[in-house]
Amino acid sequence: MGFFQKLKEKLGRTQNHLVHEFRRVISRSSKFSADDAEELEALLLSADFGMAMTRRIIEATRKAYESKGKGNFDTIKVAAETVEEALDQGEKSLLMDREGLTVVSMVGVNGTGKTTTCAKLAKRLNKEGRKVGLAACDTFRAAAIDQLKIWSDRLEVPLTSGSYGADPAAVAHDAVASALAKNMDYLFIDTAGRLHTKHNLMQELEKVHRVMGKKLEGAPHETLLVLDATTGMNALNQAREFNKSVPLSGLVITKLDGTSKAGMVVAIQNELQIPVKYIGIGEQADDLQPFDAQEFSHALFGLES
Image 1 (cartoon, rainbow, N blue to C red):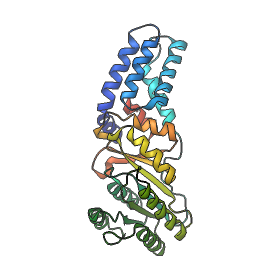
Image 2: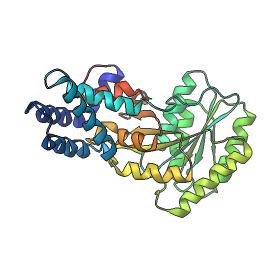
Image 3: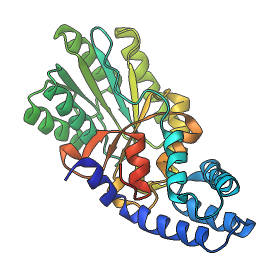
Image 4: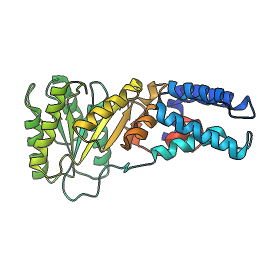
């Protein structure tokens, strides 16, 4: 099964209710009424599209009604195209045109899958012939260091780590120095999970980034926020706060296979204009794939790619 078909299947919890109810509302009258708009609003908000994106989809539907009339357009296709337009912005591929080392910092709250995402991206680039390194900068959890060590051994890529409780900024500094000495192409920094509401922890993350920047100009060159799709619109709050402390270059959305609120992907992109770079729909390495706006929007509304 190709990734698109797997994506359609995994988004089924969002898709089934969304498509059925959307068509039910649109098919019942010859005109697009205020009641229709209100029902669609409730439907889209329940799937966590957010108010701004919800209004955008409703307005596109209204215009299609007025210009083409009922029965002369596919309302689901209109919605999918509106979502695709919102998502198809920004640089969605990982930075690859730099000369020398590219440092990628993975940030986010606890439990989103940062460590596993680091490993999966390292594996992908390693298979492409890139020299990749990992850095265990989550020094607050001994298990996080051990987990990345297992991945490092499995992938046969170098790992820089410190002891439990070590200064994460010092580990990051040593990791950049080691990666430069070994002429690596990429270094993935696995940072500690932290609540976006904890000011002191966000300051510590800023320090980690400052230290890397002093060792290598521009580092980190990518800062990817890893978000758990099952948290719904709380992920938007996380994105807002992390972006204030460490400007984000992209998003990685994990656990899309376990949510009925996949609209949060669209809401975040629409408000913050931070491109989604990768999405995850399972535990296997191949279940993390580069983001494709058309594939995602079509899968979300049950259309063929």
